[in-house]
Image (cartoon, rainbow, N blue to C red; front, side, top):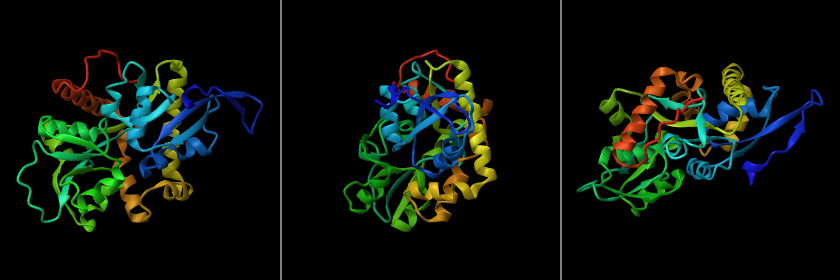
Length: 292
């Protein structure tokens, strides 16, 4: 299994044997932008990386199995694996005006939303958690990979679905319309930014290595901003959307100051989201410190 892969490899620069950390993240533009230099440059002298790319809900499932030493995952998924992972201060997707959208087919008259079957991009996604908060658990979540949701609604197989990632920028031209912006709802409810996804590291990894990875990820992000042309092909190769304007909008929306450092405001929002999940009985009580 990838998480048990403890092989070592030589660097080009020296014969020093660096431990290899397994890392998983999504092929979405914000992640490939963030991780490009960490993967392709010799940023750290203390570790090397073996990466895998997976859909967000796969990442959430793998985190429960503790397969990868470092992983991207939804905050809702993280609340279920706190005992095994700690959150980095860098790398989070968190902000304002960037939440998931509940959508329907344009012009479709819906008699009700509560109690209905609604497509969600994964049961452990923050999108599903926010829908639970909005509807007070009164709906039937149907998990489906995020990039398949719009087609199901357009074919009238389902009336409602929650969209994330690149779909946020294309749903209107595809023939869908917004029922509610779940991020806006969260902000109006709490006044806080919405925590969507984070980077987590296994607690079994030494604290010094956890911090080294955190600092290296910050450096990777800084290099991505400094040399955006280097990341271009890698981002487009992996992105579902191939329109460069959509890709740029995606990065601009989901990569921000909270990605550089989540800070006190961001942490406060994460704790608030955790309390909402607890109040709905969706996660159990846990007093462990979340951040490295």
